[in-house]
Length: 208
Image 1 (cartoon, rainbow, N blue to C red):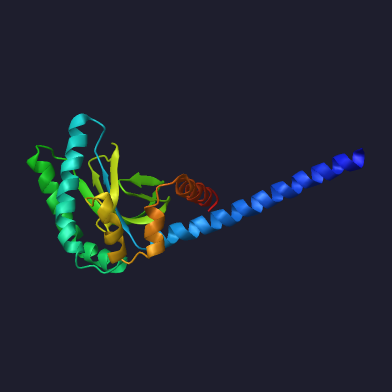
Image 2 (image 1 turned 90 degrees about the vertical axis):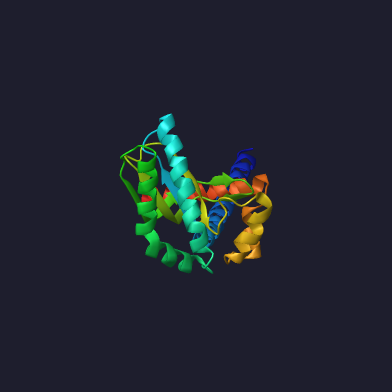
């Protein structure tokens, strides 16, 4: 009887070890996928001064001005490296434009616009999903930057793209067909994989 019970416990232990090994392998693969994607996109991150209705409306106006300015700039970029270089050259112009929009709406908030590596959670947009991870972001901080923020993808130009246009825009920016298929795949397995990336990224942040 004891031998039978020990055998069952051993089987449970082996099953748990196999599950853990599969989990670790999935986590490593998910992290690799997330890193490959983050190396090819530039996110847009606009932080409002506060959560007041007025500050949130101002955030969207500043966002619209940034998108209107960056879209023609980034049409010249063949990949993320070129997109970063083009944006870096125009940061002062984008900041002046954002400051002008803020003043035109009757506010005197400061605004800073920088290119920074930023940690993002898994985020679902219309037509695609990006896994958690560190991405290069064009970050616009309005005033105290303590309000709800707005995220999207400025390169490839997916912020204003309709769902049907996402694959073409992503392919043109250098994403592989496999990566495009992955981010536009609307099923639970991909959502689970994205959450797995987020979990592993949180572990990396916690333990360095």
